[in-house]
Structures are given as structure tokens and as C-alpha cells.
Length: 428
Ligand code: NAD
Image (cartoon, rainbow, N blue to C red; front, side, top):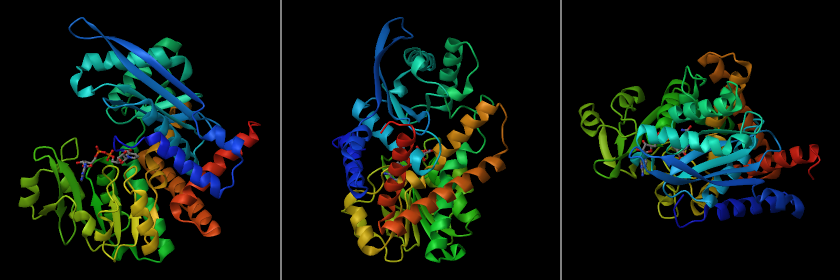
């Protein structure tokens, strides 16, 4: 999210627009426009040099009508309560559109994890749990990794919660390492989930996936598995991927007319999703400008890097051949560009539907933790496919019934499900 936009105001505005379409009762709106609970707390941490540094922490629980709150914890220097509120609100809609029985939450700490030692990070993670443990848990609120936090940190947090509560409780947190209560398939889940929705969109539009091409922005976790899925499941061709080059401080597109090989590219990509330019060039890839991915004559565009990438300024560069935009990233398309998609009849799969595979797999992790019985990767991915396919069709049906665009339909499905749960529980 660009720092000059108040993310929470944006989340509220989006909600208001759909609340109008749904003709929601003003009292119901008043509940859903704001998080139900917000925690703001200080975390004293003993630093390696013996001094005490105090960090600001947050947890926001937007709505738990459909089940325990769910959402990541971000460690970021520019974290604010409003960002956390917005992200918690979006988690409510994402879990509802994916039809998993969870609500929406988000947490954060104002800090730069890159400046902390391993020991300081561990003490900060444990400190966060010491402040919040009475208000999180498998039946209350289940955090997960997000920007600046890692599976290892989730392991420490789970351990601290288990110590304080006096019993092993892996289901308090998801995104844990494999062997420490994590789920197989989590690495692939978001990117493969993107492709399951693309597959259904192609069927709906009558496209033969084996004749389709795609261009992908980014080459991190989501983009890598979206590329593999497009090629291996759909038998289509991915002509380029892109990434941010940390040495040159700019982004590049890696193009190959006869199709990229994602597994080879992964072997020359670092942990931050930056591809080795020299090795790619030696393997026959053409290295082009960072925004070249957007201009390719392909059937499918998959922005899977960061937010605000398709905007009023560059949307006209999209080829007339493009039929589907699958939003792997969060918020990659601005509202102005969205209007152009509508005019051009581009079929957009909105972010909180398209990339819901990650949170769906996190839900599966919690289920496996509860049972203390773990599925194979194939079982996880099969269940994921079923969930994503159902979610896609729920939104498509709403879009056809109400004659609205997919993004509005996704919001309508999500909000209607949360309102129904509130009604059933007698909240409204
Ligand atoms: P990541 O950090 O693994 O990868 C990000 C990729 O984007 C890297 O290859 C990076 O080089 C590239 N990138 C950054 N700036 C770029 C630019 N200007 N142009 C081109 N490439 C650029 O991140 P990720 O986990 O793959 O997440 C990508 C997006 O998907 C984010 O918006 C994230 O919030 C969203 N998302 C991720 C998950 C998940 O499970 N990982 C789930 C839901 C949503």
C-alpha cells in the first residue's frame, strides 16, 4: 500500500460501495465498518547489548462471526494501526469468499527485522505472545507469517503460547515449519490456487488452456508456483516472468518466446525472488525493462509481485489479446485501471479470491493440528483445488445473477456470508 493512502479508509470505502449494492441495514454496516476488537501494546525486549528497547505491537480482530479470527503478523518499520485495521478487514472478506470457517485478523510490530539479531527477534516474538496470549488461540484468533515474519518466528510464538497455556497447542498459529506442525503444500498453495481459478475462468470463457500464453509479474513464492501450475496443469506457455533486482535497484522482465522454464529459473533465484541476470542471459533469456511483462501479447496476465502495478498510466499498454487478469498479488490493480478492464471486457479474478489459496492451506494446517493427524501433499492440494474451484464458482454465479463485475461479486458473496453468520448467531 502506498504510504500516502490511508489503507483503512480505502477498506471502508470499498465496503460502503458494496453495502450500497446489497442495501445493507445501517446498523449492520456500523458493525462491519469497524473491527470488533483492537489491541495496542508495548513489548519490552532485552537487546544483545543489555539495554531494554520497547516496541509497539498491535492485533486487530475485525470480525469472528464465521469462526476464529485469522491473519498474519507483520514486522515493519512503517506499521500503523490503520494498516493493520485495513488488512484485518480484508482478511474477513478473504476467508468468507473462500468459504473457510474463519474471521479476519491482522497483527504487527513497528520494527525493522533486518536490524535485529536472531536472539532479539526470538525475544520480540515471545514478547508479542506474552502480551496477547489470553486473546489468541485455536478457538479465538490464529496468527500467521506475513511481511517481515517467517515460519521460524511462528515456531517460537507457538512455543511461547504452549508454555504459557500449559499444553502443546500447535493450532494457535499457522505457517509453522514442516516437522514443527506445518502443513505440506503450503509453499505451493497460493500460486497453485491462482492457477485453479485461472483454469475455471478459461472454462467459463471457452478457452483451450493448452493454446494459452501468460505473462507473470514477480518471481517470488506466488509467481513461481503460478508459473509451474500454468505450464504443468494447464499445459499453457509462460513467456515471461519479472523481478526486482536488488543490486541494480530496478526491475527486469525475463522473456523467452518459446516459454520460460520456472524450475530452472528457481535454481538461479535468491530467497528474495531476484533472478541471476548473467545465468538467465546465458540460458537464452532476453532481459527487458521491468514493465515489459505488461505489454506482451498473451491471453493471461498474472501480476504476482506487489500492489499498485496496473494503473491509469500504464493500463493502455495491455495488449488487446489479453482476456484474463489473475491478481496473484494483493491490490495490484488500481480502481482507475479496473474501470478500463470493465470497458475492455477483460475478465478479472480479484485478489482476495485469486490468492486465497494461502489462507485456505493455513486453515488446513489448523485442521491437521487439531486432529494431530497430517495429510500428504497430494491430499492437501486436492482439497485446495476443491475449495478454490467452489469459491470461484460462488463468485461467478453472483456476478451473473446480479450482473456485476467479479470484484463486486466477490465482495457481495463475502459480505452476505458474514451477515448471515451474524444473523444466525443473533448479533443482528
Ligand atoms: P515474495 O517476496 O516471495 O516475492 C515478490 C516478488 O516480486 C519477487 O520476485 C520480487 O523481486 C518481485 N518484485 C518486487 N517488486 C517488483 C517490481 N516492481 N517489479 C517486478 N517484480 C517485483 O512475495 P510473495 O509471497 O510471492 O507475494 C507476492 C504478492 O502476493 C504480495 O502482494 C503478497 O501480499 C501476495 N500474497 C502472497 C501470499 C503467499 O502465500 N505468499 C498469499 C496471499 C497474497
